[in-house]
Amino acid sequence: SYVLTQPPSVSVASGKTARITCGGKNVGDIRVHWYQQRPGQAPILVIYYDDDRPSGIPERFSGSNSGNTATLTISRAEAGDEADYYCQVWDKNSNHVVFGGGTKLTVL
Amino acid sequence: QVQLVESGGGVVQPGRSLRLSCTASGFSFSNFGMHWVRQTPGKGLEWVAFISDDGTKRYYADSVKGRFTLSRDNSKNTLSLQMNSLRAEDTAVFYCAKDALSETYYFQYWGQGTLVTVSS
Image (cartoon, rainbow over all chains, first blue to last red; front, side, top):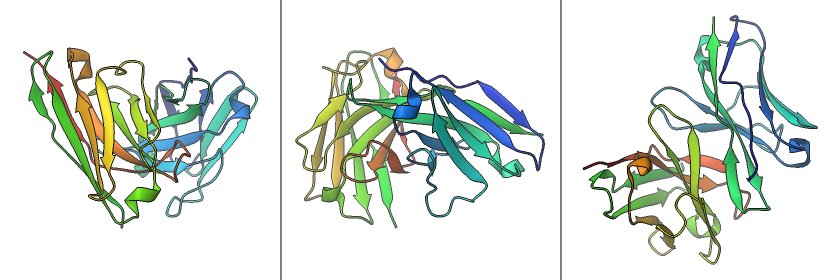
């Protein structure tokens, strides 16, 4: 089945730009979605269809997807952005939703 | 606003059954696909199952296929997950999640989750 690979952790200085990657074979050919999960809370959607933002999500959050890597970019990182981030796709070959393993973002 | 409220979690012995429910409000339930996603404490997210808006399509993760059954009652805005032959590895927080449309296969809204603990 399809596999998405994320780095377990990413650190970023406050006010700088964080980039969280999501690797998968030809992932650029399928739509990628991203979720933020703060400790003790349910996940929330932050990016859908590679680079669209739901209403209420700050413009600091953006996405891109090409080749074998999708990327979630968080500009001007804030303490409130500390969370686990998950990428997700739909694998039409298996009719399964697939999640990446998650990345813990630390804002220093 | 959209609300998804899960119920039915608890402690159950291995091999036994449990039924989870999700009550939806704030949107036209019958027009949207619905999912269950679970998360083992301290671990990542795992998709469990999907049901289409009219209930005609159902997909399951390999880890639960044959043991879990997903159903919906559009007249009551309710989603149900019947879990049989439970195993220790099924211990998790189970989230009900709303598809963005009928079959976009991403999660626009999530409930707060209900904890299932499988233990003797």
